[in-house]
Amino acid sequence: MINIVIFGAPGAGKGTQATLLAEKYDFLHVSTGDLLRQEVRLGTPLGQRAQAIMNRGDLVGDDIVVPLLDRALRQRSTLPDPDAAVDPWDRERKGLPHRPEGCIIDGFPRTVSQAQTLEFMFRKMERRIDLVVAIDVPREELVRRIHERAAISGRADDTEEVIRHRLDLYDQQTQPVLDYYRVSGMLVMVDGSEEISDTNHRICSVIDAKLNV
Ligand code: AMP
Image 1: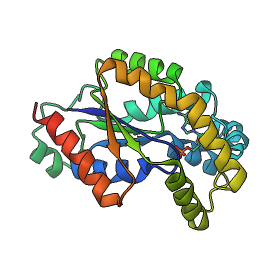
Image 2: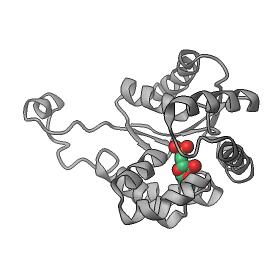
Image 3: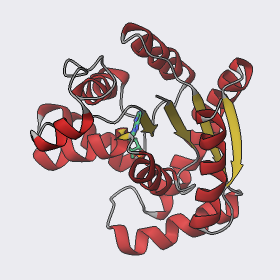
Image 4: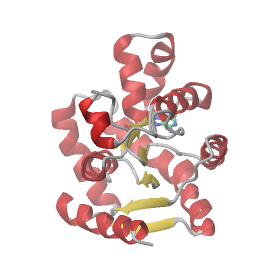
């Protein structure tokens, strides 16, 4: 069992890599950006509060994002499995949901205070974060990628001005999270400037090394 945080600036490819890793290792993938976008789509009270903030490229409040993350983490897999006695093959035959043993969190934490909250949440679940993978991409490449994505995503926060704001916020508020994790020894930096498959290969080597310890 391994719990991973995937970390990086907007455009670094966190979502893409987290999706690939979740498929390969059968992790539960929790993306706070996706959770928030879903709330907005569904027009829930949380979504209504988050929408304008997200469109500006600001960070939504912890009072919105933390309950969403908590709910998603508790949905399955991260809590002790009540059906643990059921053999996995039996589970499949009986049509019970698959329960991956690890999770990959993408988009959280974005501030040092969120990093502390995440640690607290995991401790309550008698789990811990094992690895923080930070995807490192030079600024010019980030901007190029976000523009490329903007052309197809239709995301309201992928406009020129908002992109610049999101990158500035990353520098001011999210970058310090790296130091927080560096001190704890969980952090591994991975070069993400090349192709998706190159980055994926690098991250898989880090995870495999961790799984084999
Ligand atoms: P992302 O898909 O990770 O780029 O997130 C899109 C937007 O959702 C961000 O620009 C924020 O407005 C909001 N968001 C996602 N995760 C968080 C978080 N951990 N804290 C605050 N806001 C978040």
